[in-house]
Length: 339
Ligand code: AKB
Image (cartoon, rainbow, N blue to C red; front, side, top):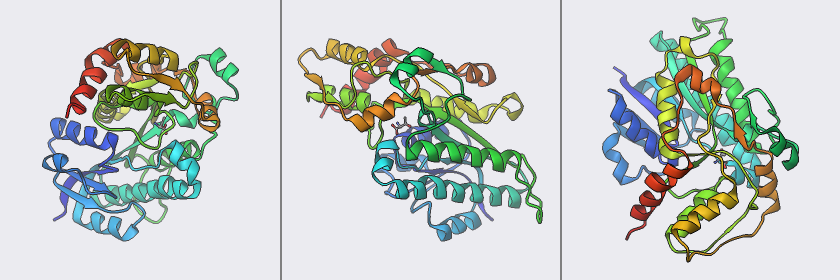
């Protein structure tokens, strides 16, 4: 008998930890955690089992296919945008080939179970590519269908994988077998920059705000790698996790699309700096611009119009700029670094 479970890849990352706890709270089904690194000790109580392994290891995925019956797959493992620019081919391998391996596993599972398998894929505002800072500031919030010309490997990978997931979900008919469109239920959110009070950021281009905050709370000075006018949407990690759970729990017939973008607040870097300085007046925050990273962030929208998510699955962030700082980030980070 295969064990019923929910599979999470990239389980040991920033989003993985929050999602494991959220699923444990909301769902009556065991979680299997897959990651290259061993799962943190504090998380082990929340999962059925944890596997150290690679999403590129097809033999491992075949073993998982024979041992578990996955009702839902949350495929979080990825190389983020800055890291991907250093090693684009590795990024392509992990982000694209890894995703197709997981989609293939989901298809096999749906086929053998004869029922829908839900698949969650975190995408990103990196799928957008706006030509210039001037244009970005002129157009303001954009819809999901505009400016889909990413300028990074990560953005290309995410956009392509959204399309693969949608293809397997809506159009794929395996002519020789009993696979019908709809057996794979693919859903995706294009996330803005995420800020967590319990994990340190690594490898992203939106990390200038999380890094500024983490350094300020630890009493360190910080130089932002993008300038004070830089503006992209952000969200707290708890709202990101809530959004995933909410989208995945919405009946399919309420969804008018498979891929949604969402936002919570979008101050400029200068506005973030002033706010952080109001809590830590003695901390020195400056700017040391990295042109490459600046150009990446300039190509991302200043905000997104998330009315589709609001209408279709009642998306609404709990944290806007003021209460995100006051009630979650500042107290959460102080607690995190208190020893
Ligand atoms: C990154 O900076 O790569 C991510 C993202 C915006 O997807 N945080």
